[in-house]
Every structure is written in C-alpha cells, then in structure tokens.
Image (cartoon, rainbow, N blue to C red; front, side):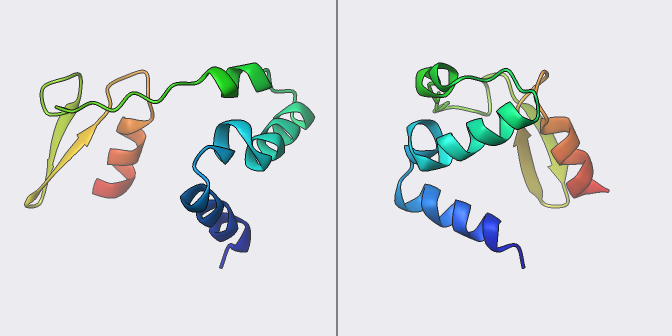
Length: 88
C-alpha cells in the first residue's frame, strides 16, 4: 500500500486548496526544484480549474468501452494514455 498516496489524497479531500497554495504545494515545489523543474509557486497559485458543464460536446474524445462511455480530454493531454491503459 502506498501510504504517501493515501495521505496525499486525504489531504486534498480535506483541504482542496493545499494542492495549489498549502503544504502539499510546498512539497510539490520542493520535489520539482530538486528534479530541475520549472514550475513556480506563482504558477500553482495562479492555476484555475475549469469545469466543463457539457463535456460530451466540448472538446472531448468519446471512447466506447464495453457498455461504458469514456470521455477523455483531447491532445495535448494524457487522456489517450489513460484510455489505452484502461482498454488494453
């Protein structure tokens, strides 16, 4: 079991803003800096989540999978990779 992942998901569930401005954001930025990453605190703080109220018609790829419908974001995203791992 991955206890770090479990803790991270619980932290996000309890404090959603922590991913962008809290302790989790600081941990992410620290790890990225050690790896030579370019994302800054201002990048995380300025990120805005956009919720698409009608994803079936707005820029998604409809992938039938058995009797389910997967709506994945189009490129450039990792939606195709996710779909591939689920389907195959």
